Image (cartoon, rainbow, N blue to C red; front, top):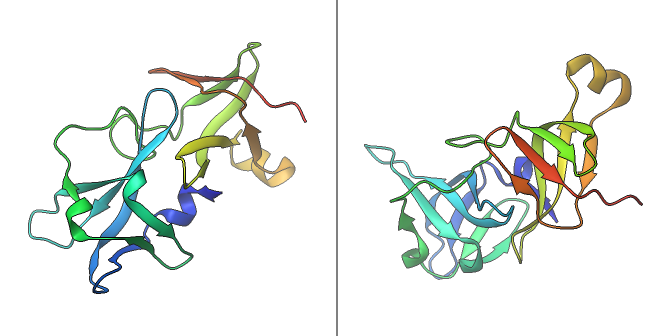
Length: 158
């Protein structure tokens, strides 16, 4: 399991020749809460975004992301449904339970890198609350309903 904050900024390498293809700058997230791919920035003149589908990632390491060939890198033609920090961003969205309880504002996501499934949201109630009580991790048991204003989740009550 990974968090976005651990993946952000990681270099992406071609396993065949060790060349660096770019750095992870965001996640592509579908409206049903699944990580579909990684957004990459390359050091080029125009700083165009590229995308790698999650199934084309061979491995996520602590110091880099590995892909089997550079052809898995695609130019970003259409923006994803949601991202963490860019267009249609999830950070700052209110997370509410299906029972109508406010759970906090999204600050990070936990996902299974092999499947792309988001299994939890790290939520904040603000700086002072975070210092006093810590951040809250909301585990989900079913795909969320991600809307323009709010994310509705079925909470795992362990």
